[in-house]
Length: 120
Image: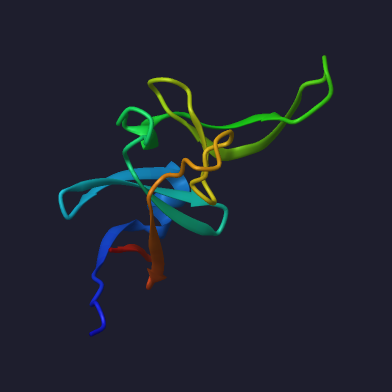
């Protein structure tokens, strides 16, 4: 038997592009919906480390691997940093930047008629 999935309106495309992100409550869960260029990503607003509202943290870049005394900055506006303990997650993949076993829970996003939907 095929499981039926529901989609829920999260925001308008224009609103997300202007604000960069929006925290919405869908099915009793907080979901962070982020605009990344022309694409949109949705992540559960719970940090896997300690349950913090990770999607409310700063959207920024990070230091890239580099030589000693060399600091390269990259992935600007592609990283969300947990507001409690500073854990960093890639907004494209949900992957923790250091521990490959740690990842945010993501949801499929669809865009139709200028609206962004989260599929759950």
